[in-house]
Image 1 (tube, rainbow, N blue to C red):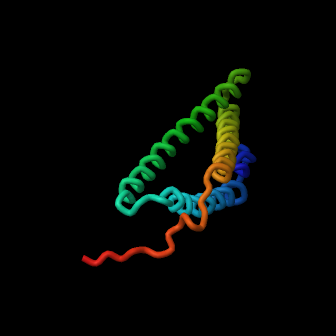
Image 2 (tube, rainbow, N blue to C red):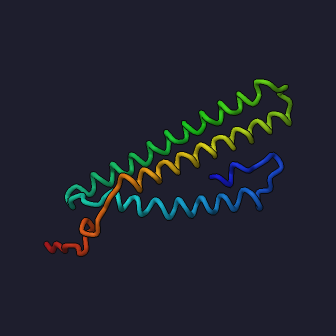
Image 3 (cartoon, helix red, strand yellow):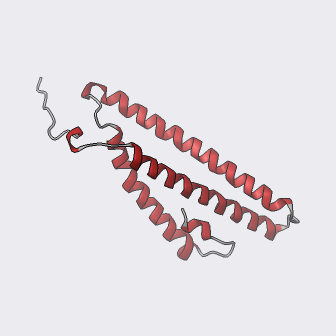
Length: 138
């Protein structure tokens, strides 16, 4: 997300956007699976389905709220940028890029805060993890 804050109207997709998107995609991929597993630590087997459904719902709602929040930052930044400028085609493009940069910076900050909160608030010991699974034959 921080790399995306450096985009400009003339930024190249291959040199600026693609590398940042690949790193962001890999980071999200390497994050979501462990966090999903972590969310289910200590949940009894008979409640695993309900806990999984709750996790899925919170991810969907969180994504929607996050998109709405970042869209608000974008819109506010574009409006502030255009407030003191004559809105011609070049200025509109620069305003949009400025809005994206602001939204990316806020997104990076929110990811940092979420990472710090995760490190400080979530404590799982080795004893909390299941080492064997019971096989039920019936």
